Length: 203
Image (cartoon, rainbow, N blue to C red; front, side, top):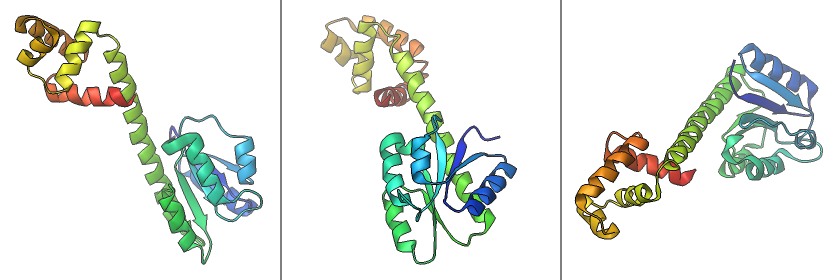
């Protein structure tokens, strides 16, 4: 079972039921909503999810929903839109606005499954990166003020001699603090330390 949910938004009950049945049969957690308004009124609390929405619906349109979800959830709720004949131009515009894929009606079930699989794969990567950022930030928080100064200088590309001059301490003392920083940050080398620092900066 996928750790991520798939939400289907379509005013056509037959389409909703068919998609839920297909996705659950493929091992996904799927739930449907009758409209974009219904979805927003009962917004799930999932940290990340894939959203499949029709473009044309009563009330709030799929194109408007895309913008709302972008502001509410950012990249953690990628959207796949279902488009009818003659709506490809709109679908392309929506992709430029952040939609990850569009599937034209009538569609081959495998086409939709491939779109969902790709969508959820991107979420798995995002989740892994989020965990890495939080881990890097947690490690950074273990540094003492002086260790943090040495860390920042190392990230800036300073040599031990330059760090010693900047902090007005001896090169030997820098070496001691540098070793502590590398141990606490769990970095085997400077390039790894820089990558961890970049992640922590994004946390």
